[in-house]
Length: 167
Image 1 (cartoon, one colour):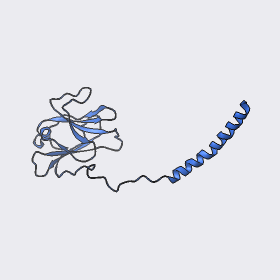
Image 2: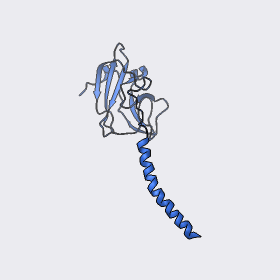
Image 3: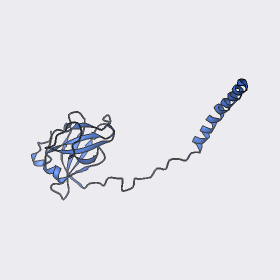
Image 4: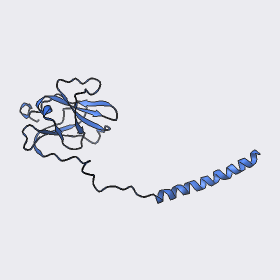
């Protein structure tokens, strides 16, 4: 009774060993290409900010991350600022977000509840709220995927009159 079953199973496994790779190849050849839009919808693309003049460019505000920061003063707004972040290709962190933390806030284990989300790291120039521009504070890089603070900048004041000259 066992010998006929073994004989039948041997032929079934042999048939599957031949038919499955052939079916897989035909399946891969028959699939349709993934549609890719020519451009992203306007809801997903960041609106370009009307950047005015470059106020300063700093490379060493983050002690543990090789991040460069550019502060822009927006046109027609004497107190509206935007900030752009860039880093070398070797600086890779998953889902990196940029937050602004007022100078009165303390950064211990995670982000405090009063941290202001500016946007995604490296996407485009991020507008800075007027409250953040008038108060001193620090930028915080937070990885959503890891759920941890990557780095925090040195305390800065965004008012260009109080900033030291760029080296």
